[in-house]
Image (cartoon, rainbow, N blue to C red):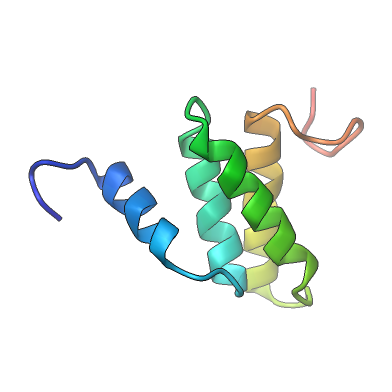
Amino acid sequence: MTDEFSPLEVALTTARSLKPGTWESVETMAMLAAELRRLPESRHLLDAARATAQHLKPGTWQSVRALTWLGRAERELGQAPPGSPGQS
């Protein structure tokens, strides 16, 4: 990491170069989407996290964490389905 870029800028740049396909990637993309919710890139990250999650099998603690972050990102970006847990 250099002094020129913030940690979030480095994280986003790195995420762009990685191929999603694991629960870890779903969690990471969802976390970034929630954190960067005011930037256009957040929607792309959320969509990529959703698409990746649809092709993975839940059943581990890692999947629970990733899906929890995905739910949070959906709420942060106003994308949570009506009646979702945690929605006010």
